[in-house]
Image (cartoon, rainbow, N blue to C red; front, side):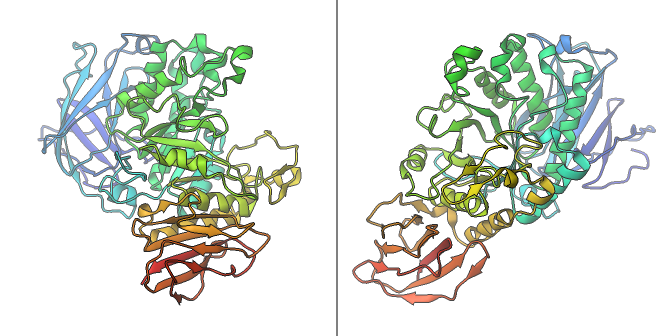
Length: 570
């Protein structure tokens, strides 16, 4: 290629079979000009491992959505083959007129070749195109690209990166992501959450700038291009994007006739084609599991667990995702749906639970909720709970995170007022109570410019730092088992320890007294005993303790705040 400037992370241009193709990391803004062949042999572009690249192809025919988003409509696939023999079939997507694109994140270093396959084999701009990419190691500092996409491995209760390193799930909630002003609010919050140690951006596309009920045409693509910018920016900051598809879950109850099964599958294919090359998790629809609260079913003709159309979407996204990203459906609250009665749990590709658990903050924990999830051979995340300054305040938001991790839910979705749902009017005019504090309409009136700086968002980063100093993924929740811990009256707690009980973490959140209890199941050895203040990120000096008969009476907490006790065998 004439005058080509190589750059491993900025822009790549290549020519193949006389057609100009564009290779670029999809988090970059702007387009690329056509490559000039000049009669020379085209250079093979270099692409960083795990970073999404976009390839563009041009047909002489201009397409319409009616030709694509119907049963038997046009489809483009790219078959990528690595030098090691790995084959990934990547779906392409229509992007207006005669333009089709594909996004690909190479999973292995070395050379890759690709071959395009289009429904109309006579369309030589789209069918039979060949090309090569040289995947080179990622040289930046973001773990998601250094270690590879997150996965859910059978038999493990925590997510891992592709290289097997445990992944600490700490999410921030954005149900109206498309409505967040991009250059001010959206980018500011993504930057802030990445800086504070969040690893996941949880989103719903409520308010997306398209109307899919009326079919899919050129104007619909503008809404998807807006989402592209947001997915791209989240990826640029190294966050994993736990995203739901299309629109509010109720749309497929209110307006089911507008969405045939075939149309839903085509939409799911388009979604996977646009976004699977990013670091993502699929979280199908808000509270779609098991049936979007079927109490509405008779009045509004909603779906039940056996005719839930979101199952079609779930299966199709999984089918067209070449990377096998973790997939779940956002569950109803645990009073309505848990692991055992999930209507998605047996679908191919379902490998984690996105629970909605608001545990008691002022009374003894119902350990049975978390234990039901723990007893399933899948990962569970407390995906949605009480949002700060809506249904709880700082202490409650902090407590929920610690409770989740010490009860085997190796992931927590934090949320704050005017961020979990921008410009929301939901439950804003009432006074709520989390059992600890009242949350008044004045508290709820806080805007995102203030709630972005809530102390609990920083405290979630402290929690991550605390756990990542330990082998947190080896912790086994004890669920109130007296063989491990006997609490005093009015002691609120969660406890977990490793298999040998040589590492123990106990969280006390009784905020009206300093009670603790007796630790059991210890050996007759010396232990390190350290208090940690989760609100202020302070460790107290280590004390050496000596159990008697396998037990130790902790005594009093340092004060009436919430405290973490770290115990390890010396």
